[in-house]
Amino acid sequence: MKGKGVLTVVSGFSGTGKGTVTKALARDYSQYVLSVSATTRKPRNDEREGVEYYFMDNAAFEKMIAEDAFYEYAGYVDHYYGTPKAFVDEQLAAGKDVILEIELQGALKIKKQIPDCLMIFLIPPSAKELERRLSGRGTEEKEVIQARLRRAVEEADGAEAYDYIVVNDDLETCISCVHQLIQDAHCRAAGRLKLVQDIKNDLIEMVKGE
Image 1 (spheres, rainbow, N blue to C red):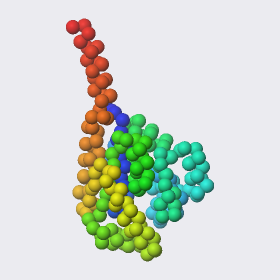
Image 2 (spheres, rainbow, N blue to C red):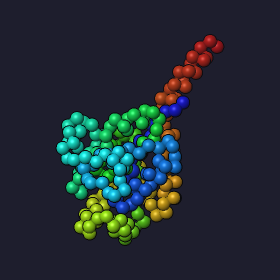
Image 3 (cartoon, one colour):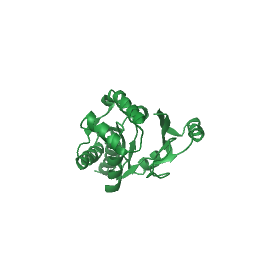
Image 4 (cartoon, rainbow, N blue to C red):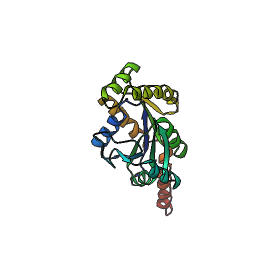
């Protein structure tokens, strides 16, 4: 019997490698589905509409807010980001494990609405490595990089809200660790109680005639 999927929230400082890790999981394991967030920021060169993000202007985003169409939304470095509800709900009901790659503010809102979600926070091995990764992108001005580093200072205080903290030093090791954590979450008692009850009811029917 295939049960409901696990909702996993992956967060971490900008430049930690969240996107690389989550995309690798979806590529290597068929049970994972990446939730596509909406954003008002402009796409980077390699980003596609409906794949990495749904790109929209402020008016369209605010219309979705008014319609209560987001599980969460937040402002981050002068732009909106949000998680549309419909896709997440459909995939979980179909037994898929949905991975949400979102920042701290949105992650805490998800946890409040869906308490049994799995919360994973990715960190780099050091502050110097984080700065190196951000600079190495070559897509942002120095002022933007500094803004992301300042935001990381604030986000560090929120890491205690997560179930697990994973260091992304060696990429393959990090991917394997996150995969195992999600698989372990399938065995949590809270998620299996309905199955236990279904088995109990079937057993009662089986022994009635004895």
